[in-house]
Amino acid sequence: MLKGIPSVFSPELMKILLEMGHGDEIVIADGNFPAANYAQRLVTCSGTGVREVLDAVMKFFPLDTFTGDAVFLMAVVPGDPVKPLIREDFKKIIAQYEIRNMDFKFLERNAFYERTKKAFAVIATSESARYANIILKKGVVEGDTDQPNGWPLP
Image (tube, rainbow, N blue to C red; front, side, top):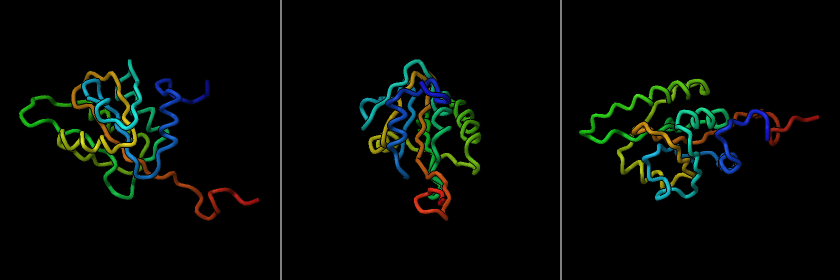
């Protein structure tokens, strides 16, 4: 066991986050999402919700600030009366970790599925809220640009 690692993280999830590079995307999916059908790499976080996983991931995960499109949500299907209130929680969680205001982009349901196919990984949760799926695009960790390879000189 290590200090400071969120309890929702499995070794597999930590490994996946470490393997991801700039521009790679990860999906955090609700319990209704067909994650196994679309995932290149699937991590199951049974018994957790999207809020808990999003908060844990954001502690380590820099969002892409170069493209302006770093956070994607599944749009509500036209005619569905559901109001996904969980999205306000997503904004609050992301705002805790990001200096810049991150606009959310909405993808039609099938477009969200197609984008998921290309994602680096999918985290399947037990979230019961509908339309609680979110895609995060990884950015870069800011470093000391004056030093070669980010290492301090003696």
